[in-house]
Image 1 (cartoon, rainbow, N blue to C red):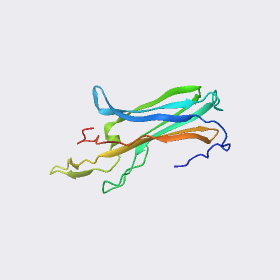
Image 2: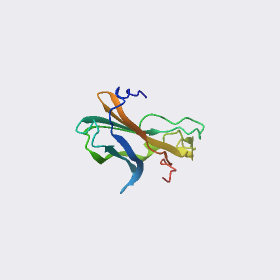
Image 3: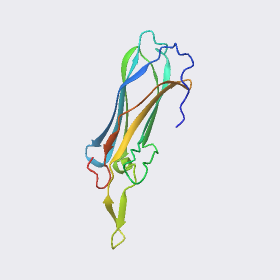
Image 4: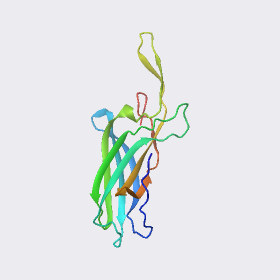
Length: 161
């Protein structure tokens, strides 16, 4: 993943990301769907140079390979959120949400077999590990970056969240 350069002036006061969280929530009355929710607080001090400035937010939710399965995790993003917002003094809360198909959260290859009629039969379901990365930029310079803790579950055909 390409990372933008940090702001060239190390004396600039920059907003910072705190209290990051990734949740995977069942969607009521939709057993095949899950809500991905990424939340965090952004803190800007009164003397922060970015107060009143628009910054770009990119959030990528993807698999994290913990080397606990016979195949590598798929690193293709499960969801990408992009937004532009104005930095406010103090602490402000930010949230990104996206509904996804439950099976798309299985970021590692599962083992399957076929029955006598050619039907697919699950053999094993791996626990999958998912993280969200938050990146804030201004004029293509990095303001701050954070990664959530790993959320582990098994969301596919045999999964029990």
